[in-house]
Length: 342
Image 1 (tube, rainbow, N blue to C red):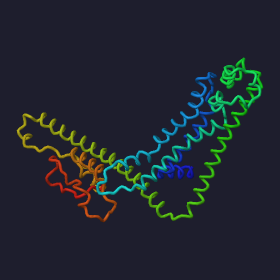
Image 2: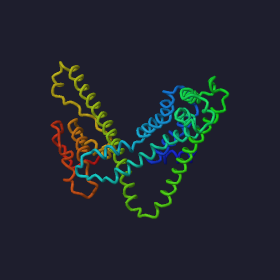
Image 3: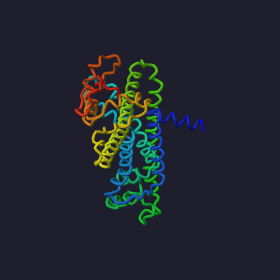
Image 4: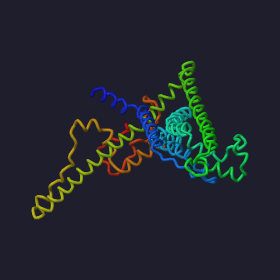
């Protein structure tokens, strides 16, 4: 149980582990989908190629898009690419690293489907049955061109009366299936060789640039995630204070209505809004400083248009106006902050 808990915490804390897990899950789903799929070639000259190539290429495209959608880093990469520069320069190397990382994970499931389809051979036989050269098979010598085309179109349907017991059908089907498997194993070998060379040759080069880009790509992902979490925390705290303020106001109005005939009640002060405990007050000081809708909108706009520089000892003036942008609803005694801690 403890090992399972440690494994769960590792996947939860590491974005790369989560993405690798999603990638593996998509690959497993791909194998399951292909094994449960019922393949039925139309056996028509005009539609065999369309149907076969459609099943060979369309599911990989859909799985590729699903891999990009499931990968959080792809969205973060686009946001980093399109964001205004502001006080933080954009590094094209980091964007390229994030793009290559997202593409590598998204290509796993499509490649699994493509290799399974090629090694199985049904889609390839259906797609290219009408493209076989009749001169490679002696049995076609006694047929007219129209009969040859009809025979080749019906060839994937082994239960059809025209090709049911024909040895030529078996020969053509075996030829196309062997060609499909040869292409599938060639792609598999090529991918293994490329992965082997990338893993073995990478330590031979300077790792400084790779480590820097990997670090800052993880930083961009974690920064956005922490900003979203802090925004949710502030929204919860802001809503809590608004509800408390509403109930305090309603309580004062109800007391005023109940004691309208009492002259002493006119001089009574409205009860102040309940404050949070002291421990929470100090821990959420950076959240409680933003206390109006105008400030929240300004903070979010500043975060998008001008992210702070990656220098914790920089002058606060480089961070923009921050929370010095005050709404009229802020109390007079509130001390404006010079920068955002979010």
